[in-house]
Length: 505
Image 1 (cartoon, one colour):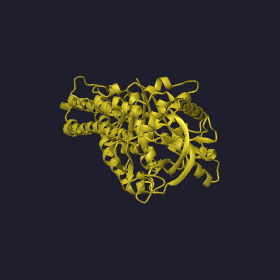
Image 2 (cartoon, one colour):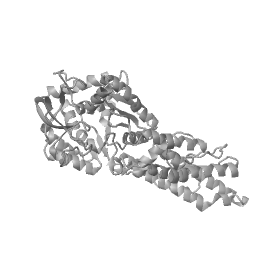
Image 3 (cartoon, helix red, strand yellow):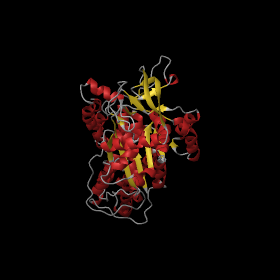
Image 4 (cartoon, one colour):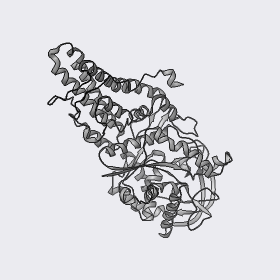
């Protein structure tokens, strides 16, 4: 009955863009849903500060790396709450608790005989913070993601014997076919392992910004060796005086984008095994939000500022668009036009107008009172609660929302078919009208609870407008949950009209 979810920790070489907001918001959807089901949850996000590109940006600005990191961490910390996301802890790799744990973790690997010293010579993409083989570059020798020429590096480093873990990783993938989702990402990671693993550098020489190795403080931990460990280190100091590893590590789930699959699905489990820890329970690899069919990134200069979208549409509308427009796990195109279309047609019309019409009719025809009607035939939502829960257990955030939205459409169809405004014209239809109005309130109550993980600000507004308890436990996603109430007034629009010129400004 526990659920632990992590986002990647984000590089702080610049401010957040919509891709970072996407991962954070979708992670929050999953965590909120599991909490609705009565599970004890822990949600982790944060920033990766010890990257080469962070050090270089600090130098360009004439700042010490820590001073720069302290400044830039502020907008990153603000991203989650602005997205209506509620992480339990925000980790920074410059935290003393994290640095202590990393040194202990690496020492465990060293003591296990899995670390050795050698000379590295090869290409390094600072944008990816990753070493690149020639096969991973374009014919012109460029990084396929950043379209920049990697730097040639030759230095004496410490290496991790990743090759020694090939058989154990293959056995892991054989025993746990749901270890990595979606399935095609599982196959991608397994194929990489089966193709033969090469040892990789776990330290950097000549760069003062980082966590010194415990056995050789002249070198610092390679940024990925440092960063990946955050998923475990945070549990040791996120709550003062508590160690949460026993409670949450067995139920750890990592959410990540496809460009960092190899680090998480291959390197990270091998490092855990080397240090004597269990591997995470599951990893889910999602696609990119694309702009003009290109990954959104600062280095490519095609970013969308998530805070600007939130300022125009509100966080719930942006969360909804993210979950609705792109099949979670696949690549999808991002556009401001898409936000506007979803806002108008689905949020404002399908959901907002349904609430407005329902409350207005109750206020007009029944002076704000709703009777609880026993035995009324409800709008058939089928096994909505079970269906949505099963989809979200499989990280099908988009499919779960489509299932819920199908129920929103059916409730709208019910209004049209029953025409309560016509029933109100004849007192002989009083009982029928009471039934229809209760059915609408009951259906909207269940839907508001089902949508809470996606629309955490809007859902309580719907319940409050209907005079219903704002408790969002999952057992309320059913028929017959609404209580009889008085005092319902015509609700203000949930999603007021936004003119396109304003949205584009």
